[in-house]
Image (cartoon, rainbow, N blue to C red; front, top):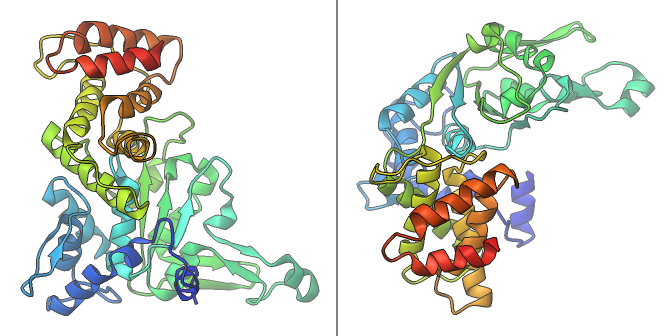
Length: 370
């Protein structure tokens, strides 16, 4: 029994259910309606996987909610890659939904998004290859019973999709242990004189970005083993507002937060501030701006609005107002107290102060910035 199944059996509601659990009804409806060819061990056809991510309406009226708002061709290329023997690398700046997309791809393809290696500066080689139960190892020596498989080894054995998050944060020597797995589809276990060969259906989804500090650039040998799909920032303000609104609604329902009446105006304001500071120019193109050190990603906008919604629900009248999002915006923008505070103050005085309909927002930001 998996951890998710144990939690469900105990009647405990998970704070953040895995994608395959949260959207189980959609996956079930897609599987029932899906009459297209499916690659070996796939739960759905490539067409159904793309529909699951991008949304649509099935013949029986079931509405599939969009999990990703962006170019359809990028999703189709990503899904097609997984249907081949090439691994998939989702590349992009922080906050472009790389983790979100990788989880939903794994859920739709394999029905299990939990075969995950989380990349950090301290990720050991055992997390990619395998480890040992040292009690068994000392008592009986090397054996299959003493071997502790990594998520990748389990995915290879079962023909599943494994995920590697933040690949560029993993030390270079650990990254290189992936080369044999991805090129030869085999994982040698020299201690036992054996190897694990990948079963059809196995593949890897990795995510990476090259904007954060502390990244380890991928070697050309490893990068060649991946098909790379670059996930862009939302192309238009309306697209970003739509993404933020959808995710805030999902998160709010999972946390039992009341829906905020007329909250769309504040969401649009947060997105406008983030986009202008991120792009270094106002929406009308008339005023050049300095950009802060942070990324001001869509994910951060979602966090700011969700926190504002919680403030409005617990310490206000339930209506999302400028004062509820001002502190969150300040925290997102001012990462470097010296340089970013100057950028923020200049933006407040030259743009926000003079903008029609933004007086309440200006006052709220001035209050938290004091």
